[in-house]
Length: 326
Ligand SMILES: [Mn+2]
Image 1: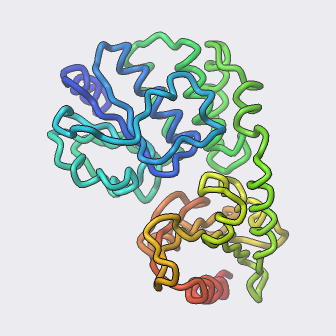
Image 2: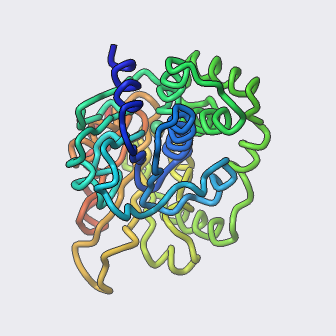
């Protein structure tokens, strides 16, 4: 059985690199921390890695300070475990080097997973990668303490949109029930995840809403955030988290798109610029398919892609696409 083989492999590893995706969400961070705690309990040496800064709302998580944003020496590691990434490039600029390691374990729940690495634990029916990590912890027979419970709970709580999204399954409730019994505090997690916002973030939300447009047929909403808007409000990419849901909740809208200009690698008037496009659907449209068309990936209801283009062209592409939504 694959899971036993992976656990055996990890136990025989010398030093394991654990990594999750750029611009991490609660599942990327929760499953990373949970896996780190679990492997340490098994006596395995680990280094936790995420290239992006950890969003303020997740800094309350136990042992979050263990996450490094740089890999000092890739040769220290004999195994990498990649969590919550549909493609290994999602870990950032170290992807090539990590892929060269003797063993890469791919643990994920995205339908667009490219099946990179030598060992896979991919379950697209899992509500979160944290659900798969939970199963590993159970299989390994580990005791679940408060830190582990909080990490798993946060992964599931955030990836299901607080048990509202279509990936909310029976396991989401049964695992979270057990995590609360093990010391995870729902109020503490919710208070931090939906905590206070900076003034800049609210001003950025104002600009995002001001940019809102709807396609002719009313089925697609579009918001655009430029680098200037981030500069003006003193915000970063992490502050965009959740804003797309305003576009998604408009009546009759089936697909919400949010375009944000990349923060790095820009000359003042350089074209084309780099953008990240996030897509959310109400469940009736497969946005992973749309994202894949542009070289991205994700889930049926939540996906995204990167593109080098001009805002006007992206806007036209998306509105053309909207007309095809039946
Ligand atoms: Mn996830």
